[in-house]
Amino acid sequence: MTSERSRPLLIVEDDLALQKQIKWSLDRFDSVVAHDRESALLQLRKSNPAVVTMDLGLPPDADSVSEGFRLLGQMLAFDPDIKVIVLTGQNDQANALQAVALGAYDFFAKPFEPELLNLTVERAFRLFELQRENRRLQAMHQPDALSGLMTRDPAMMRVCRTIEKVASSNATVMLLGESGTGKEVLARGLHQASSRRSEKFVAINCAAIPENLLESELFGYEKGAFTGASKTTLGKIEMANGGTLMLDEIGDLPFQLQAKLLRFLQERVVERVGGRQEIPVDVRIVCATHQDLKALSKENRFREDLYYRLAEIVVNIPPLRDRVGDAALLAHAFVRRFSQEQNRSSMSLSDDAVKAIELHPWPGNIRELENCIKRATIMADSSQISAEDVGLTHSTPDAIDTSLDLRIIRDNADRRAIITALGRVNGNMVKAAELLGVSRPTLYDLMHRLALK
Image (cartoon, rainbow, N blue to C red; front, side, top):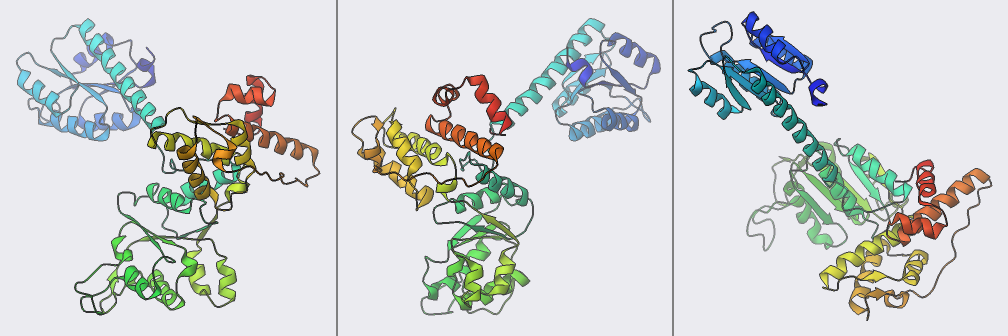
């Protein structure tokens, strides 16, 4: 049994003769011994056992079970999955049952039968290994913080790794990218990967709210601050206390509000409109924009000091047209989602539709692609969506790679071809190999060499 030697068995017994007898009876296991609570806790940290056999009566008062129960609680607190088998006297069934109620795996009355004890210990090891394997499999299938984002593009994968790295910090993050590139998806992923995930994620679009209302939306207002202010209302910053606040389209924030936001970022306190009290707020700021804030600051339309406060970590998100293979990958995913929503099962994209999607520049990025596929799933006359259904009948030539290094040219060409093929056939390795004219093992070798997953 593999678990017998992977993690040891701990034997806790103050009677040296009985300690040797138990160890001899369980000689098939890699055993370590302890004679009291302190030595047992030391072996627990040192050896990290999966299974423990223990006597409840331990020094300094071997006639009492208090030390044994105390040790049992400490072991289960150290490792809730540890399997503790309690050895008791013949007339001590009440304490044995109490130990099981407190979390012990099983109990045995002394004198014990070695065969039965061996069987119980072996089953305890097996249960421990099964539980550990079950947790490992659950973790493999547990969606991560960026599960809402789909990509095969290397540049976009680097963006995801950056988000994962900075999530654990409290640094202010600026997301730069064209409209529709997934800035809010990344901001939510950043929040979910952080220690603030249990608190609120609050988003506000600075371009969508009239200038005269934006201050009260951000900072809140006191009762009577202006006509219609019938009650004190929290602003978005206060609502996000303990969590994450996303300031979308921060480049459209009015100039006079930029000074107030800067003061909040410096002092981490807010004053509601019409109020005088400074209210401390603990919030992580994520901002997003499609504009060039440096250029705006040179034109005196965006405060330079605010820019540097917001740009502690800057993440540039590539547009969809620059993400190799992502357009087809996302299109297949949108077809599955919208065909289910429209109760139109088994819908798929035709080859000409996929090619047209790959060649289209997508100025509106993912949002444009999503709307395009949704319309096509509604309007298509058959279960196969054509280029005409998608509304794309024109094409644009691929960009020319000007690199003269033949190895780089070959690697880039192989990478682009593989990613394009996988996107075209929705990740089917057999069909991708056929499309590329290579065997499946060759395709796996190429993907390994090019570090493609």
